[in-house]
Image 1 (cartoon, rainbow, N blue to C red):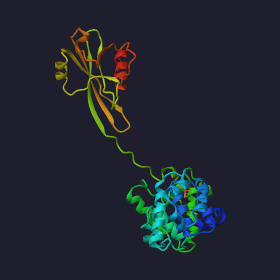
Image 2: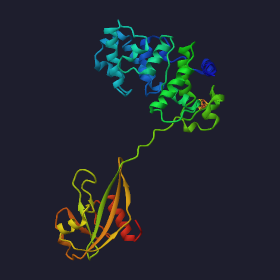
Image 3: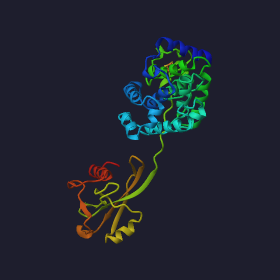
Image 4: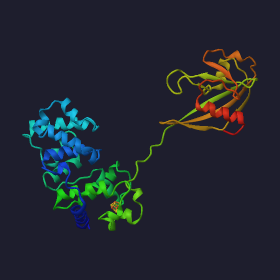
Length: 347
Ligand code: SF4
């Protein structure tokens, strides 16, 4: 099965694979390394002009090591993820200092260099060293997750381990350099987000395709539940039907907007503000969601018998008629409750 998988991928590559990419010409460990770093998070078509300019100006490990960081970053400008360029530069200096200017062509040797992970090391070993190296970049993960119906999010350790095992099992012992290119190409050009299964050499054995579940693989990152905070808002109504609002501090949540008083101890609030409660109605709680958390709001409608609207005389407090609110900024819970009070609908 594994031989057949790699045979079919290689057979497809012989006919359809990309063989004229710039880093596939004049193959050297340096050129493969630079291309693999550039291809992390970045598409082939974007990388090509950057790669050509980079290796034209910095054609060897020694040239890269001798360049100053500004020069390296200059040739990287526009590619993004600049830590990649800085790590490439640091690695070049280590290679010159500790490895006689030659990339160490072993998994451990490459992994010890800044910015080189297991998949990049595998690609360099396979493509430039023509030794058996195993890769598992984003494209390969997608192909394997679908073909073998590997459930779960790729960022989870157990899923990653399962995929590495499959990557190892499917990597052949011959034509490793071609296979490495081939499986990456298959992911990039056929098993894309919208897979072209009709053009795929492993369609017959692909579990996701056979069960028409390609959209389920790879599994999505589980959504983290937002934390929930709670608050109690007092909708204090005076005999004129006006409602008390307080202006929030200028910075922070709802900065400068007008909102209901929030407090756990409404009796203390009443006493502090010279208000006397005559009726209290618990309204239906509701949720207001922010980017990072939910706020569960329990609104309490409190009628007071204080006829004088100036009872609460702070500058940051005012009585407002919900049916004809003034042109000031309200928090969303205020507008929501005003709509409910005005229309008499349930919250
Ligand atoms: Fe991807 Fe379709 Fe090929 Fe399966 S058959 S590996 S889903 S392109």
